[in-house]
Image 1 (cartoon, rainbow, N blue to C red):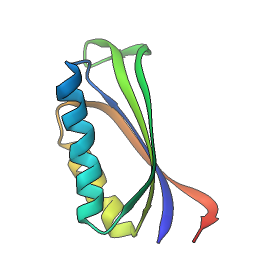
Image 2: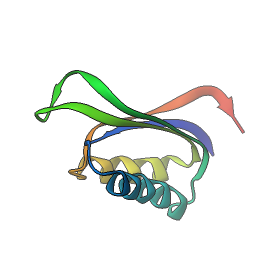
Image 3: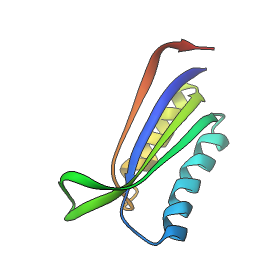
Image 4: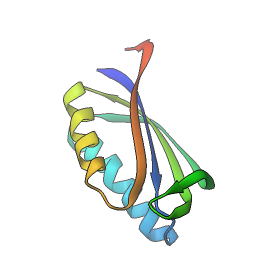
Length: 97
């Protein structure tokens, strides 16, 4: 298993809808054999530039221990989720179990 940083920006919505989107991805990672090491919710922030006609977004950073197949599935689902403005998944080099 490898350590990854998964960061994504959720469209500004009501709090319960935002929580449901975040929970969707944490459950997806766990269902594919990954483990959430830390969840860091940065909250609603102003974007540096407009993305999909939005000027604000809700930032979330997850530290995930997972196999590459789990991360690939998470990336695939994030690409087709309309509630996300942007996402990025990077491997945290040098920090392996």
